[in-house]
Amino acid sequence: MLIRRPWTTDPTGGLDSVFATAAEAAGHPCSSDLNGTASFGFGSIPTTMVDGIRRSAAMQYLLPILDRPNLKVLGKTRVLSVKINQGRAVGVDCANAAEGTSQFIPAGEVVLAAGALSTPQLLMLSGAGDPDDLRAVGVRPAIDAPGVGRGLSDHPDITLNLEVSQDALPAITRNHQPGPAFSTALHFPAERTGTKNALELLITSTPNHKLFGSEAPQHGTQEHLLMLGLMSPASRGSLRLRTADPFESPFIDYNYLDAAGDQTALRAGLREILHLLTDSAMQEVFVSLPRLSGDMPNEEVLDDDDLLNRWISDHIGTRFHTSGGARIGPVDDPESVVNQRGQVHQVQCLRVADLSLLPSVPCRGTANTSVFIGELISDFMT
Ligand SMILES: Cc1cc2nc3c(=O)[nH]c(=O)nc-3n(C[C@H](O)[C@H](O)[C@H](O)COP(=O)(O)OP(=O)(O)OC[C@H]3O[C@@H](n4cnc5c(N)ncnc54)[C@H](O)[C@@H]3O)c2cc1C
Image (cartoon, rainbow, N blue to C red; front, top):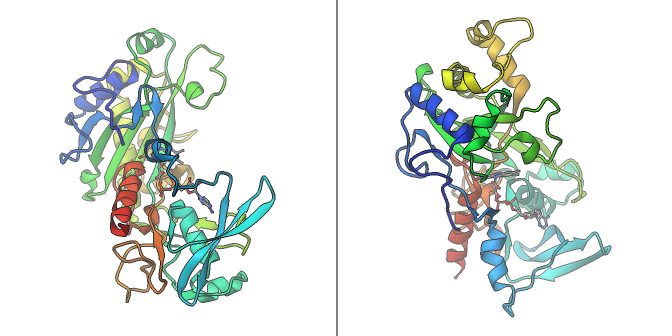
């Protein structure tokens, strides 16, 4: 995977510079490498965007080797379940919905890399899960694996919409180089509250209408997103089948904010955001501060933990970094699903090679960790 940084020593103008100025004024250090060992500060986000193109794992790994005689890629094909015969995975049942065809593909070994939402779902559809839960939806249990679907871990996110003032627009756009949607991040601990939970604040360099392909705002300005993520959450969620139909989405309970420390950290993060937004560099650019409540000043809401908790719970979303659901652990731990080589306990010739095997979500964006997991598991197979 090729890694590029949108900027090295100085942000390239636009909102990145405004954001960096405000972060520095608030006492945050500049980090020359957000992937490095210094964990906190503001800096350029390492990306896999090269020459304006975001390189996916498929582009980097699969496209260059498509002509290998021992490789066949089936597009538009959905795996419905893994066939487990007497404790051994022997292949997968697949369907091509576009052509209305289905087939069984036999395999010496099956590696599930369907992601942290689909891999646990596929394991359950294949009979690996809590036997009572499986029977309740009409799936015949093959192995007793109650940890499947449990322990989901994700970065909860709070996103604020900010409007750039008409006066500031020319300065914001003048020196700004087009690049990734996110170029600058601030990593900081929620330490004022005593919790070490790490927080990440991102500002979009690209305006919302370009990011989402929507109409530009009529009033001649542009909107950007300021996103607060809780990167070391303690709360754990779960996933279970709603039906035995593989085309039905599973029921996902993220269970964000279950751990009191997660709420405390997000409150601290929100207070920090509102503080940063009062910086003069920010105030020159944005039309007005986001209102936390229609009829109360922000200060009153920020001072009241209960009000703030309620606001957070009304505005919580996902960073799309879901991990867990088939986690690594020793075979005698009922909550663990795979061993350190990704092999599913109690089933021969079945592995997991994606974020679902992690016990907790990594504390940064998950894309490259998932690639690393693929590399690691493939090493175990050779
Ligand atoms: C909108 C969005 C933006 C993101 N932005 C970033 C970012 O900027 N930086 C970052 O670090 N992370 C980002 N992420 C997170 C990152 O992309 C994921 O964490 C990572 O891709 C997870 O890798 P994975 O291999 O576990 O699963 P996935 O990447 O989800 O791969 C699973 C694959 O399996 C396929 N699949 C699933 N079920 C089946 C089935 N039944 N049959 C056949 N195929 C199946 C899926 O189509 C998919 O191709 C983003 C995620 C989203 C959704």
